[in-house]
Image 1 (spheres, rainbow, N blue to C red):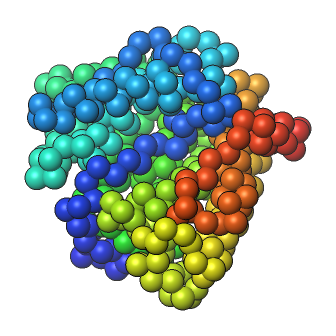
Image 2 (cartoon, rainbow, N blue to C red; image 1 turned 180 degrees about the vertical axis):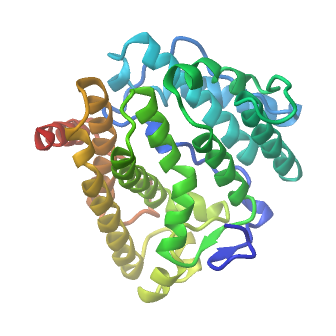
Length: 329
């Protein structure tokens, strides 16, 4: 959705630096981490943010975004997931860390590289190492091109959109920023079908929303608001309320409403777990558990997402994992 479409509001220059990240590469189960087999380094073009991007990529790959819950996976799965993570991180860095004037060109270059990877374009080899690293993953797992392009499109949208008028508008953003990751993961596990992708979309959108509701204060300070404007009006909330030190009663009521809606999406997608083989079943159950635990943490904070960022404890995540697996049987 561009800024000339309904529901879109132009993003201010101050919004650069916002951290998004693909939700299904988060730490869904234990909150702990495990070092990856090799560091993930994205490759920005400008020296001023090259170091920041590389440091973030190495740190998050080895200390944040490759969860202990997935270390039981055979090496080939881990390597494919890490390759996709490196790509997603590179795309996000181009959209978040690069000088704002350079972002459109960098994202367009990544789009061209993905097309080259699939034998389209000018026939040259992709210039991005992160895209080249996808080659065996794309081939071995028969992953189509569109999910990779959608992740770039989400970052392109972030350059021009900073507000969402309706929940439907926000869901449209999640279809680009979150749902493609679930499709890619299903392909990596050899489990992709149209029906499973539909259930995965519920989970990924729910996870993305849980992350947004945890980070309301951080996002507002960065100039970006994901709470739908129509919902804010319905609950009597103004944008200025998101910059307060503590959430008002009206804002807490709004967050409670949004948390419930995100939880309903996770529950709608949870039947996906039941139809999967043991390895993907455990992984997807972990993601559902992480999302539910995050929403529970917000509820425990009485829906005040301004005083501090609500984060779930390991015990709650473990309990949610047990629940997700048990209900899938």
